[in-house]
Image: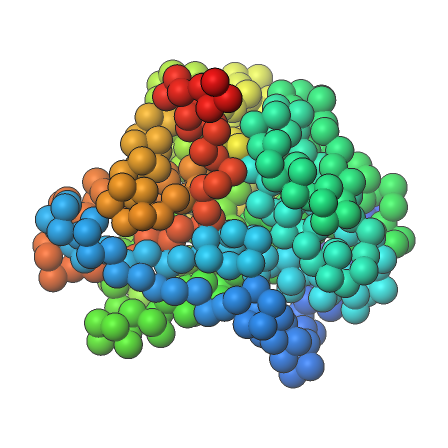
Length: 396
């Protein structure tokens, strides 16, 4: 086992072509050094604050709280960050590492497009070449974000292999990286992939929960009873959980995409239905068919229709520390509409999965209890898709 082969119990590891192992070793050395490098940390936090607009708000959702009649609900507003999502946090950190390693080209995979937009944004800021791989199905669903990436100077490659979804974009990005590792840095957006990527995403996204912990202590004088975050590959959720992992009285809930239902065959509920396997450079849990092949997945959310989960989440579920629940398309769309009408917030369809579970959970809790629900991103990109789901023709 190499020094960079970070594992979470039975999950994690490095399952990549031998040609990429030196890159992972160099990357891990740079990553471990950056955590205690005052110059790196100063630049990272300067960009988070002055460019991304942190700290993000912790907002008391008074109307939701009163309407549901259970626990007090606070919203961690990652949708207010520059580029409109939590993805910018991790991209800043990884792009700074890329500069340290002398890379001139950034590549990324993206589903809903938010990670691609964030990567294209930082590439423009740093004057670096940028290529973003996106499944053809997702480019059709997220045309606004495709145009945003192009506007920022990135080349968007529509991947037609497989289902044309996020997993296929990851495959294409990994192939590019293997061929161009000398000058290319692969910016992975979810808490997935070979080590040290899951640990890096945890580190750079932990700013979400570090801020939320301090903010809730200031607002309420105590820690929350529960954290709820949407969970596809797991970057938003692990960032929301990180600062509370050692607080056993704080329940951690990840809302994953159940699509048309857990038993429908059209779902992406990995932690509820998946099994152990190896894919995309890591050992984790994946949706697999009876022959052990990666199964087809479905969700209304382009950001959650991934057939696997980050290894840290698989370990959190296995230990009982993390709890993961499926939310259907219909529940997510209802939550998308609900939070807009109750709080005047158009949240991403990914985030709406977390809102949907927050509504269920809050109703079972006492008024003296507290939930923090992370809004991973804003929902401008999803309005047309939700309108189509509801049978509303916007162009008529």
